[in-house]
Image (cartoon, rainbow, N blue to C red; front, side, top):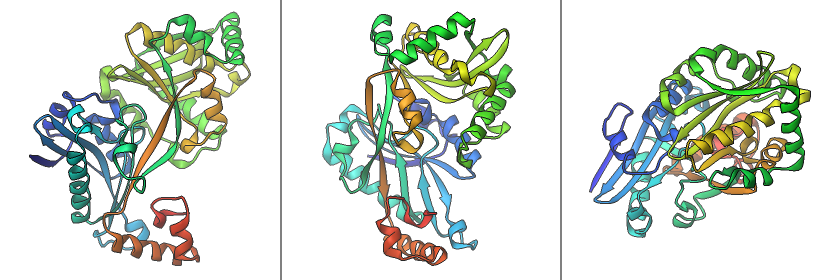
Length: 354
């Protein structure tokens, strides 16, 4: 039995991933750049017992912003942005004794490190039915995500597209819009401008904004990252950063320039990318969910590209109830509300309610 907590520089990280099916969100480079962006500490919790493997990347975040002090004794754990979560080998999935043991060891480690709670999003496709393995008290459904089955024929993919989207895509083609894949490093400033314009337009939360350094760091993902542009007469109308890993293409961040909104070129962009992804031998193009997993207008837009859905879950752990309750009491006092009211809300952890 090998139980370790490793950082992104440890060669064991990639050695383990090579034995599992993983996504970009599990790569040490990606987890590290997320730690850098969020000013947290990146780690991976690993248990290996012959063919049985439990692997979880996560970020450790200080709770000093809740306490209003610099005690450095209170922390919580979160997932990197996107869809990381636990990876299990096939032998681990089929051994409830091992998964129960791994889950207990994870909680013990978190508590020993002063981590009072952990909110860990699971991968909608690679989660190995973890919602059935772990208790319903700790696994909560966030919502649904949408993906395009690239194993279908091109005609079937098109047939599963909403009629309104089909009309928009055909209109973009008639108007002369063109799409192409380019190197992110050459167009990173163009992309950031369009993305920020989009976030401003939809009044996105602060957490959906990323600085220039973040995009520069993304370039280091090399072969796992792509940029698609849709242009009209050499002017960029829409753009999207894409991840490609393990047969899955992920739509990471994207946007449309305001002046081109009436033509909806992003519809054409997703249409172009899915056939590009299929030609490269990928199995799925995952286009995600609505904001926060809700079935909002963004979800409705994405749902028009495919009928395939995935349940999306998260782990909610409280390794140290004493510290968790203490922070919740502080937060309740700050918000001038009752502790029970915070604990009964759907927000987790309760002490970060707003």
